[in-house]
Image (cartoon, rainbow, N blue to C red; front, side, top):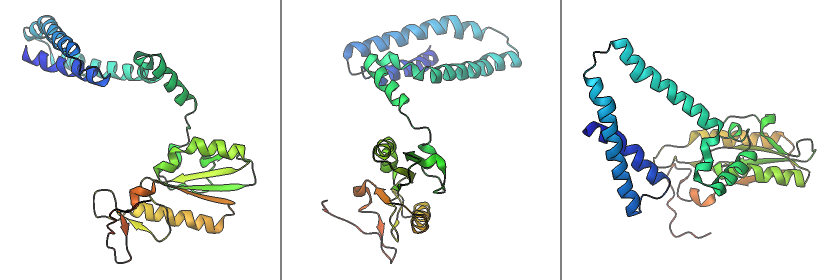
Amino acid sequence: MSYSLYLWHWPIFATARYIGVFNDIKVKAICYILTILFSFISYQCIEKPLRKQNISFFKSLLILMIVPIILSLAIDEISDKYKGFNFRFGEEYARIDNILTQYSAKNRTKCFNKENDIADKRCEIGKISSTKKALLIGDSNANHFWNFFDVIGKKYDTSVTSITSSSCPALPKIRQYHWGNNSINTSCEKNTINYFNSIATSKFNFVIIAERWSNYLGFIVTPEDKKIAVINLKI
């Protein structure tokens, strides 16, 4: 029955950890009981009988691979349709998740880490028809504020074009290392050049550079390609 125990312990214990109740001693005891119970049932009803069966290769393939794949895909589609059954975490979680879904921006990811042209209409937010133009560039922190700048643009009659890149300070003539290694972040450098070329050729009333600045203090590259070590620097 060891294999059945192995199969059942993970989903039961992982679920308890996922919903944040595993540290309760009573919950742990229930997890052990459920693991043993389900393992015994599956061993007696599935594992033992199948050991005595002479099943063809095609039937084994159908039962053990094709059917589970179809079921998994079906469950995934249903889960996606009903937003992961968010109600299982309580009414408050479901309410917050529904609000986030309602106000999610479909084009936000399409204008992040892409070599988008400034003229890409999918990246315009705020009051798009306005003659006042703003450009928002920066890292993922800037991208996270997509809806904020959308509201600000509409309120102050400004069309905001948002083009952002992950872990990129977006400052001219500033080169940066990738997180955790000594290779230059060339994609950031390339995107930044494109940003400032667009600023030079386009008529923007405002240019907004939004970053989590503290992330970049120790990863700047000097003209000699030497990393700057910043110690005890306070902002």
